Length: 317
Image (tube, rainbow, N blue to C red; front, side, top):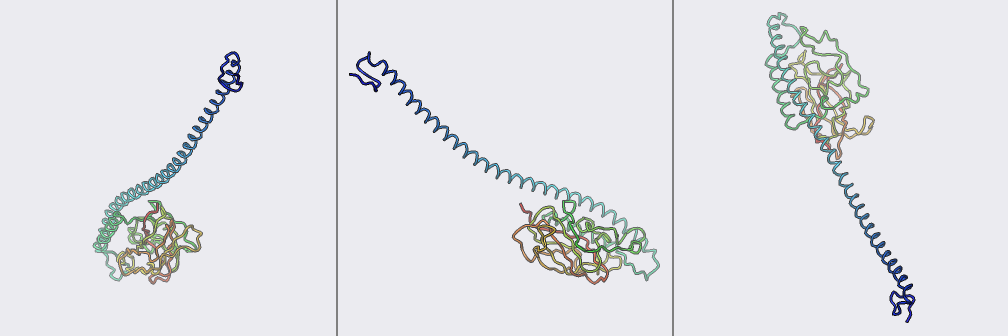
């Protein structure tokens, strides 16, 4: 019996060629099966690897974003701590300096014979009370009332629009070469700096003006604090140059003509020199720029003085 297309036959003499063909056929089938198996395995490995890479890429991206947020928060907290330490040291130095100056003024005033002098000099007790009040404010700030506009922490002045600076006659507003009550060279940067002493303010012409401040980071704004000097520290015993009605705006950029109105407020120059104003309109988004618009002052017909602006809120991560 002869079967040319089988791998087995009875007649060995006739099956030599057929067996070789059978071997080739079997090897060919085996190789196809192995090739299919290897290809399927490699494809499965490739799909699994691709899925793992995509999953790992998403995880890495998420970790990178979280790491960037944490680094940013760490940097911000570090600046705030350094600012608090620096502010505390400078405050202590100024306390000593003010105390010495107040003693000198008291001695000079004892020898002052002109009882009709119009210049109102601060009493030593008033100066010390102001110092205590300022220290309480610093302690409150250290407990979470962060000032995101503070220059040493990263705040900066972006614009004053068309507001015109007012120049004082320095000789008229100084006393005994000890205390310069008004320094006409002060720039708008004065409103975001630590020092709040008579004369260390930004003065502009008239009763209306504007100042745009870039915060150290975008925040959800909760309140703003305005500060002016107390009446008993003013050279004439009055604070008519203090702002009166003002509004607060959130800007996306300095060219933002629309902005977000947080509210309109009133500063009372007969109350505490440091006044906090919680916002009236809550925004659903953070802002990195705020603009304070002064609409009137407390009665001075010539100029308005801004001593200090603080901006508070929740850091946007």
